[in-house]
Picture 1 (cartoon, rainbow, N blue to C red):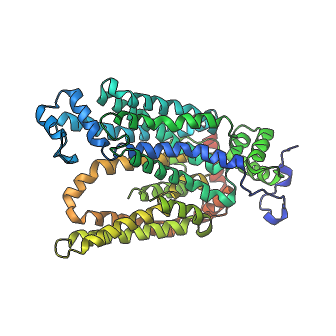
Picture 2: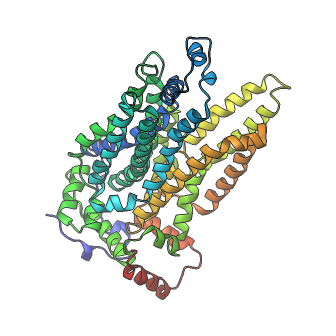
Length: 495
């Protein structure tokens, strides 16, 4: 029988004093729940990579040109052979519609990321992931059937809808995984979001080869498969437990939270976990549910929000093996250490790439330096700056502002993706071979920021992490001021 354990939890009590046995073991249900959630990340990776899959780009552009009536005999002659990918149709309308097919994905992500807080709290994490799969399946059908209709319109619509799905999924997946993971394995499980994205990109590149699906007959199938993981995930979500933290803190369902904990961690004494959630719930009751606007205005969470946004900004600067290495290392080396190593290494690689590009005409061996720097750049990205920003936001915020913070950080990530995709060609034209110096300077700044402002969260409970930020605020607001701000938040209709 599970009971409310408020009498057993005393603020400031030594952790060893409340020596309830806490399960840290991995169970089949926990593994299934994490795998099921990560299917959303896999789908996101596939959608990111499929638009640039080998051979698929030029095949789709040809169908755009045919649909628009600008595919003339000269282009047909080129198609018969003796052409390269860069000699494909370059009519202004074709280029515009292809650009929209790429850009609308990011626009959809930017828009829907603001809705993560609402979707996650409306009916829960599990039902939220289930409902948004309608978007993914709809997008897959539109793109999969595009050859039968107007290709450029159906692909653009499908990409935009898939962007809406991915913007929501990129918030819901880390949120759910972070809330169900044992503290001991929270970093490794949180990293599976990024690992699944990279695997999705890899799959899209492999099956996008010409002799598989990247050809004139099957390109639309390649695009339509973007929605396939949603079907499998929808079936598996019915057997996955809801987040215990959502059940207990948001809904107040103690018994259901205990059942969920036991399904995820095995048959154990849930007392300490419930006590921890009770403490977080009491804090959440003081905080109230925050809207994005209120979170931006609140001084209480300004430092955590700044850290979350900077972590996602530092990510915009992707190899499979290094994601696996990260999963092993993250709960040993720590989030802060791996992020510092990753950003510092990327900064050095950006400098090396600049040197290689600047002197490649004078020294032939400089091309090897550039290639090595590119490989190492991606490697350093995957061991820290790639996966960590996705799950650290869920760690550094308590239950009240957590969904809004994840939504805001996700929007920051998608917006930066869009800006870099749109303006990098212009930046390259302006800076030439020295374009990576801009990224080196930014990476150096992010490295210094992480070193000075981001605490280590490895092995800490949500309450312990919040206490670290409370201490790091330096001169925190007085207690009456802080309580007054909380009362104002609770009384606001925006909260």
